Amino acid sequence: MIHKPNFFLFTGGPGVGKTTLIGHLQALGEAVVEETHRAVIAEQAAAGSRAVPWDDFAAYCALCVARDIAKFDAHAGETGRIFFDRGIPDGFNPRWTPPAELLEAAHARRYNRRIFVFPPWREIYETDFERRQDWDEAQATFPRVLRVAERFGYEPLVVPTADVATRAAFVLDHAR
Image 1 (cartoon, rainbow, N blue to C red):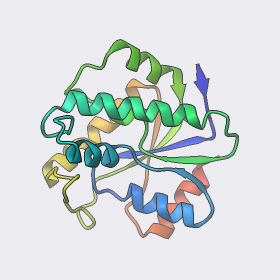
Image 2 (image 1 turned 45 degrees about the vertical axis):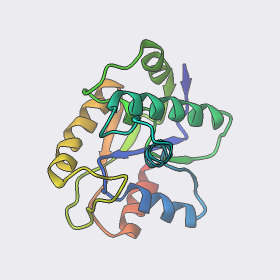
Image 3 (image 1 turned 90 degrees about the vertical axis):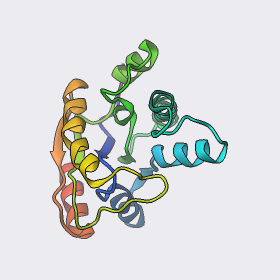
Image 4 (image 1 turned 90 degrees about the horizontal axis):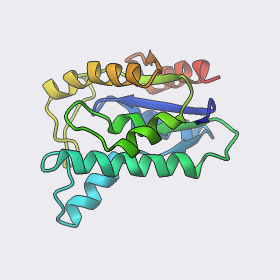
């Protein structure tokens, strides 16, 4: 098992401000790892692949988990604090059954026990090419994220809906 208490995970549904906060923290000098999901969608769509959430959800999830495992492993030697814009648990969803090796890899790679969960926030939510979920789906994602956190033994800390500086202060205060 690889336990990295210096790896802090941001998770949550679409359009909740994770990437905005990651960018803010990076501007403050914090080490960050960018999100996988949008990159996978863009790459697969550009290649004409069906491995996107609206065509082949299982293939999309498998690609995301594999890439997030690789990102975790690539940073395994780091000892300083790192914030991850989504991570391995984000690829696990009740809508697909993961291959055993991906599930085992996810259980063997541990972020800090506290993960930052971003709740749905109507005022900032919007859709785009990669984010096609409607508001109802965005809301339904929140309890699923909490269940996945529990499944993997993490303690979710719900990030307040507030301006980016307040959110950053909350995260930095709890990322120890």
